[in-house]
Image 1 (tube, helix red, strand yellow):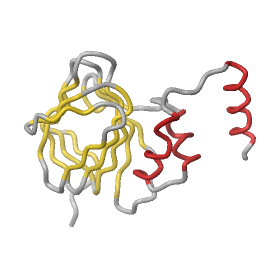
Image 2 (cartoon, rainbow, N blue to C red):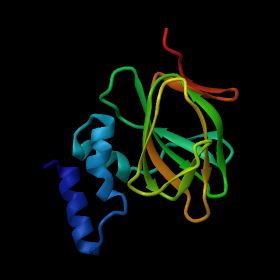
Image 3 (tube, rainbow, N blue to C red):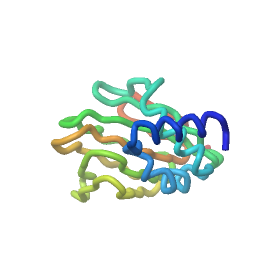
Length: 155
């Protein structure tokens, strides 16, 4: 066990609480193709160092063991929508907090749910009332959301 991990465990033991996102470490590790401790460290860092994508939407890069894939931790303020966007390759997401609907399918997702989209899929995410939406997403190549392009189209 690393010193940082040991310090974290001692601190959590001292305050008697478990971090809110710790329960998602194994699923996040699988999604990102990294070890569980690295996933836990990434979740523990929260949105530190995040950059705005659009108003009320911010994202932070995450480590990813899948070549050609982009991994992000995304926070969307409640009452906001992620506008229609296209994924250049496949997308897999894990909801950590909040609730949303995937449109036009109309499917509702909440904490622990996984969302999968095929390449060249267009969709919109509507964040429902309650806490902000927080999710981990892994996208092959990247995506385009209006004038915002993250990553690149496959050759």
